[in-house]
Image (tube, rainbow, N blue to C red; front, side):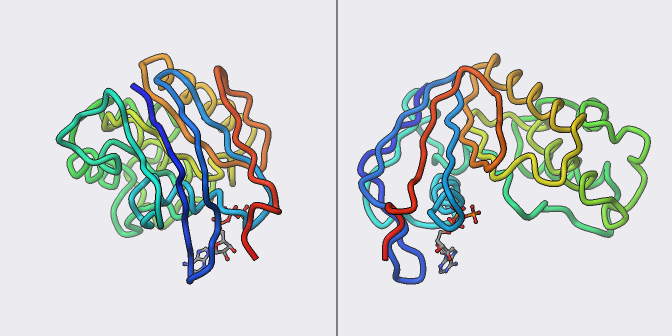
Length: 204
Ligand SMILES: Nc1ncnc2c1ncn2[C@@H]1O[C@H](COP(=O)(O)OP(=O)(O)OP(=O)(O)O)[C@@H](O)[C@H]1O
């Protein structure tokens, strides 16, 4: 499987954010996207997730499921945690497992992976920032999607949770998945390719 971007361009609010972007990333590999604030890293992930249309260019998931869009083969782990505050931790995850389909880990196993097994009954609205982030991360484990799009995945995570995140990323790559991650932190995942947006690339 290979994700290929050719001559990709994106505009936000009528302003060019990036253009002529070319990259590819294969199964078992991560693409680490870096660059200063506002250059378009999140925009790229949102284009890949189908949340923002590309202005031009093509995106292909070679070896993916032909009847499915790229977006529906991606898990998008963005800045918002996509949790329903009144639902419990377990209910939130059960919802996503059923909604996204392609069941993978059980709710209990996924919560144990991210260290939330002792608070499964708590409403998500009571969780700390880091716990909410870990619950959002567990969403990636309960349904199989080959492409993980991670936007600042280490934000709000403590050192142990960051190590767990890296372990989960490596496990996903080992299963033949691929990852595109935008980050300001060092994210020592391998094998990885690197895509650096320079400030000059941000359009005036
Ligand atoms: N909905 C929107 N409407 C108009 N402009 C937007 C919108 N969302 C983002 N932008 C602009 O697009 C540009 C790229 O933003 P983006 O969030 O992709 O940057 P980033 O590289 O992820 O930044 P950071 O490192 O701060 O997260 C910025 O100038 C931003 O103001």
